[in-house]
Length: 313
Image 1: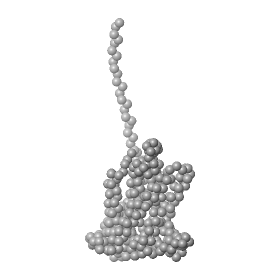
Image 2 (image 1 turned 30 degrees about the vertical axis):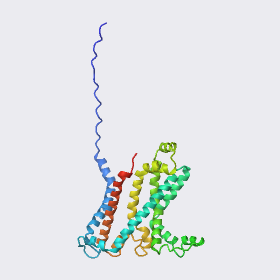
Image 3 (image 1 turned 180 degrees about the vertical axis):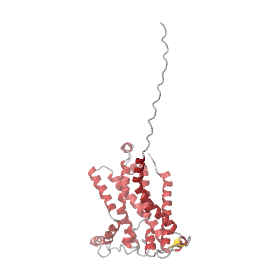
């Protein structure tokens, strides 16, 4: 039988890529129109004030007379100014206590709420814990100032009804500092709670089932499963909480005006008082610039430490 003739191989050319679509002039102008308000707003209300504050930190200006260049004098005066030193120390102590309490409370409640409970009850707790955050910090502080009043406050009324002595909450150093921390944490932990709740909800249930098969219970399951997998979310929550706490103003200003003495005076309060009460805008800008550098350094340190303690799936 004769062999079959060779069939010539034919190659099918690859399909040509679709033509690249070019944006029309109208689309480009539409993009500019939509982006312009945001870009202009950020430039006018964020970038320009920051640049102006940096420049003003090297001048002495009382808004009445012309600015006078003084070089680094505003910064050197901060070292010898007791009020500034105490305010920064108060702010650092406040951040350590308030953020630790805020994160631990938010984490505990997030774990409990994400546990076995009806969906309507979970929704109720989410709304309840987040509700204080939508309130004005000044209005909440005014309300709490009456609550903790030594003479007619509800807190002392409850204490006296159970046979305990009234506490001078806002007129002693310890009491005022405690009230400021409690009011701040009560109003701000809801945001941290929602962030951590979302992080815990994203953990695969199969990991918890595997931990149950291995005999892990309670704290062991939290330490070995929940905490490592929620660590990226915890990093975001801690960075946000620390940055916000370093800028605390409303609660100490409304509750105690920084007193008694300087025990609750924060760095932002000193910026406000130096600028708008003492009319030393150059010195206030220097304080604000130091605070900004402190926030940047703390945030950088957090991200550096996160390389060791944060675990990504």
